[in-house]
Image 1 (tube, rainbow over the protein chains, first blue to last red):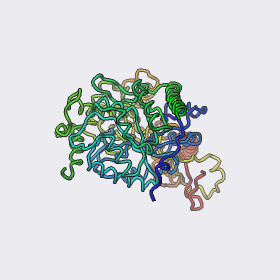
Image 2: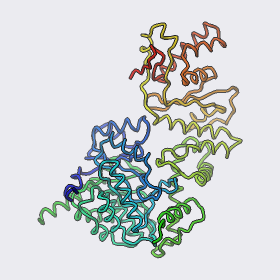
Image 3: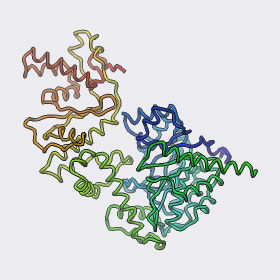
Image 4: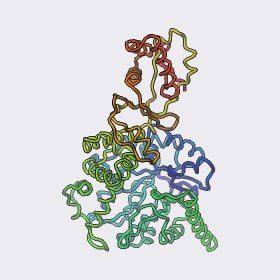
Length: 286
Length: 268
């Protein structure tokens, strides 16, 4: 029996940050004002040592979400069983809030590019991704979240919009979504679509998590570099996202040029304020 | 749509990233503010930038030693011929020391320093094991010592050393000018392992290297000591054996006892 839409996703744990090694001391020395943290799964797919020691201490204090970069859900190579076994073992250890990766492919013919490469939004790709997501969910015993990636090109073989593809994948594979609001903005500029129209077409009941991040603006195009503070247009889009999707677990994702933790906590504070304002207005209106 | 279209597209895209002849440009829609070539170049560039950054991180001292320009040039050439084949970026660059040995055949110190960089990284997140404490040995019966063997740390790596790479490493670590590369007068070996949570290394001579290799292969400690008598007097052998054992215990190199009452003892 399929669960009702209301029970598809977990209640939002609130606001969090992506855990980065440079901030281990901050999290180990004192309790920080975040409700949860997101770890990069691959960073802990190692045999032992300090990364796992830190993980063990931090997971005692904060709920963790697992976020991967190597699932390569859209590769025509098929799923990597060894990678999935390691992912499952880590999940068994961490007992995460949820497990996510990206709606993309990262390699083919046994090679990996370590980049999140775009898929054509075709029926063929849809069928393949749905099949892979179903296999992954069966193996992990839970729904996974797929994140929209930034992209810099469109394929002639695409037969639908990115949002239609995301919607179809999540419905047909019965998975959840991780919305990267920055990626939506970046792609909207690079491809010339409406970011709000993108959001309007996504299923509210399947959006479990939100990423906020920075980018590099090159004038004619934007690159999703995750090395800057969240940009103003992305904050505006986050406000719109809160209005449409309600309370969704939100975090700042910074991967490069990583500042002091306080800087990220201040940025997260802005996300909290925007969400609070939106929900206050909605409460008054209701 | 033809079957296998997606495979063809992915192979063509991948060929483009690897600088091979590719038809990917024909698959991409033209229009917008930047050209198809520019759009594809963003991915082409990101692929190299990410792998280069990973090599710079993994081979930090080697990078500092040969400088930005030489490192980038040789790393990018390595990336061209070495597409990643592991899902985890952590493992990319394992063969970079071999590459450097070929590219800088006259300067073996570079590959040796790279080996040290890589093995320190290996030791950092290798399998955990609880070290044996000295008092675990004090309770052994004298008959146990005849068959006693040691399980050595799973993080331990033993590598031959031909240059003054250790001195170069320490100078770079302290951000000082490294000494001029120099070939060692006598053969040495480097032990690289993790003590506590931190990778360590130290130079050893032939005697200690041979003893550790024997122990790693499961030879009993008494048999390893017996071999020493061929090189030392009985008194010297007793001193060398006792000092070596004390050092290994202090270094947390011993993580289990074997050959004691026919049982493997791990003091976890």
